[in-house]
Length: 287
Ligand SMILES: [Zn+2]
Image (cartoon, rainbow, N blue to C red; front, side, top):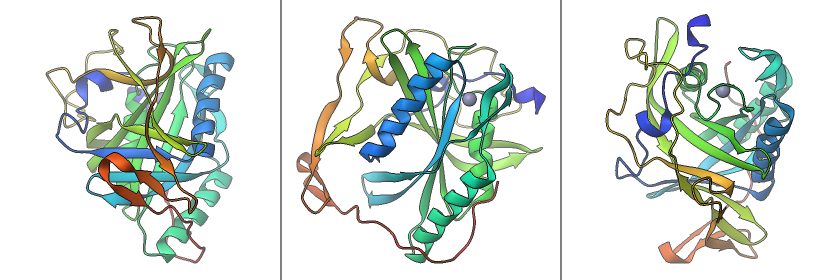
């Protein structure tokens, strides 16, 4: 897939967010899952190579849609990428085995699992954007695994000395393969939340003022079918220092975890269960 080793979309300009579409989708990570996202993102800044894992979660509320992740596999292994040997990552057999065990647990409960592919970029090239290969992969994941909901997430450096990093989540909808290339109506989720102690926080944001696109968008290949010609709101979810103001980017408390480990959102008058799933057999996740 040499043709795909490019960055021809800037997700903040070219992919609509759920806000743009007047839909509400919130993603919540358990404290352990979010710690791993932070560790991998910071490690990519410091060690100049990608890191990655699968996360598995489920929809815990439908309107507004709330997806909760409380499981991650072990880490992907280093692989050859456009930046050189061992600079990229790819999932191992062990990663897929772990993922499939978790998927079976969900399916045994009649719950559709949500599988999130996370990887973090080092500060090389146009690292703030998904590559075409990344977006293709997420669409392909959705096509090949109808038993799951597929989501892609990128962690990327903003300032390695502070350290500050950004996060971007995209969901491929109506995915297809065209000449072997995954295409989808991608939607960006800007409502990224996590648990810390007994609090639920929403990740802070800043306004993106740089251009993250390497090449002109390849609209004939059409990986991003829901391509935006007008800019979206360009807000970047991030941890660290706002590059526009030099002030720290503050997360917002949006709720708390009670003694029964339920998630409480007082403003929305919602209390949601997060109890775990048990293990039994069913279908598998296909590469
Ligand atoms: Zn990538």
